[in-house]
Every structure is written in structure tokens, then in C-alpha cells.
Amino acid sequence: MTEPREIERIVLVALDEDAPWGDLTGETLIPEAATATAELVAREPGVLSGARVVEATFRLVDPRIAVEAIAADGEPFAAGDVLARVTGPARGILRAERVALNLVQRMSGIATLTARYVSAVEGTRARIVDTRKTTPGLRSLERQAVRDGGGRNHRRSLSDAIMAKDNHLAVLTAGGADLAETLRAARERMPHTAHLEVEVDRVEQIPAVLAGGADTIMLDNLDLDALREGVALIGGRAIVEASGGVDLDTVSGIAGTGVDVISVGALTHSARALDLGLDVVIEAGSA
Image 1 (tube, rainbow, N blue to C red):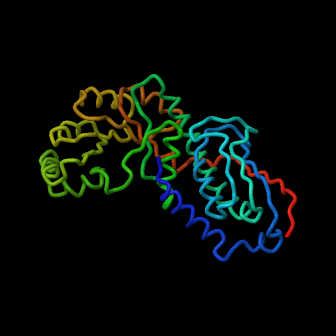
Image 2: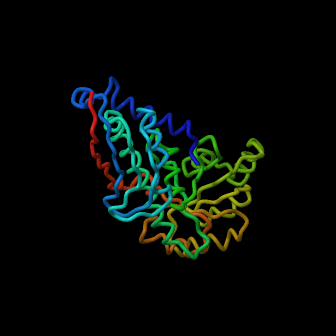
């Protein structure tokens, strides 16, 4: 679960971007003593992600705003469902509205898309994971949204695991170095707690990568026959990840080849923001 301080950090940056010197409209038009109740309403079905972000946004704008969570993160909902209710000073609610909606719509869109992928591979051993193809600055929230949709997370950053992709291998073997020996030498230098993943785009590369001691082998952009061949060749000696060419039309077939992990960049780089709205009813109040 995303740490509260991480949520606050992201929300504070967003609030500062949206109202760097205050909300000119709210402070000009809305009486200071006015109160309001607002409901977060779904305009379409989906899976909720970002309930804690909504709460943090309104609280950071004005701690007098009360937020009632009606639906929980990871919970599916239908069009017309009320997902949360906020009550308190109207100026604060109106100032927080756009930031709260931007974040919860983005996160819920990712959770909803992830849930579709997870459903498509149900009954197989494959688990759906995200990638580093995230919105800069929002990775923590987008990874949380993937989890809320039933998916798993890949490495968070370049600091978390060793992952030798095609360009790394091209540099390493440019002088004719043996791939297996190069990987074994890398294992000698890496911390004992680190994980080594190696990407291959041809089945013929697998024996050398296995000999080099890879913990995970990513089969990148291989067709189904090649994926099945790769799974058989690896034979349980490493985790098998499939990547490339993955969409909702292909993911079931990829899962059927016996891979352990399917990484899907589209979960975060192509998810459509879900249509959620904040319906506000101004209550009686006077300055």
C-alpha cells in the first residue's frame, strides 16, 4: 500500500500547481462561511482506485472537510454509484475538486484496465504486472492502481533489480564477449539480495542466459510457438516473463503458453481516465 507521506507529497505538488497563489474564483465568488456537500459519482462502471488520495486532497486543502468513503479501493462499481461524500467549507471543496478528480480518475482508469487483463488470464499460471512506463512523478499512485485492479508490480525503479535488456546486451557483447561469462561476472559484482533479469528476443539466446545464472528470463516479442518453446527450454530453472505485443486480444493466448509473468506497459501508459464526477450541493451559509 502506498505510504501516506508519499500520497501527501504527490497531492501537495498537484495542489501547488493548480492554485499556486490561491483559488481566485472561489475566494472572490464564494462566501467564506458557505458550506457544501459533494458526492463523487461514477458516470460509467469500473474499479475504484484512489479513495485515500481523494481523502488526502480535501484534508490538505482544509482539514475541516470531512470525507466519507462509501466504496473501497479495488471495489467494482456501476454507473451512478456514489463512491465518496465530502462535507465542509465550500471554498475548500471547490479548490480541491479538480486535483482530487484528476488523480482518482487516472487511478481508477488504470485499475479498471488492469482488472480486464487479470480476468483475461484467469485459470492460467500467469500474473499480470506493470512496467516503468508510468507518468513521471505519479509512479507510486499508478502502481497502487495496478494492485487495486488485481495486478502485480514489476521493479519500481532502476535501483531495485538488475535487468539486462537488448541495449545492455549489445554494449556488453560488442567486442565478442561470451554472454554467459559476462552474466556470471555480473552476478559476482551484484549484491546477494539482488535479482537478475535478462531479456531475450530469440530462443537461441536462452541457453547462454541460463548458464549465466538469470533469475528471470524475459521473452520479448516472441510468437506463441516460440513462447512455448522458450518455456519448455527454461524448464522451471528461471521465472519466465513474456513482454511485447500484449493487448486484451492477445494476452489470453500468451498466458496459455505457460509463462509465469506477463508485463503490460499499456496498464499505465495507455489507460483512459475513468469518467467520475463531483456533484456539489451548496448548503445554507452566511459570511
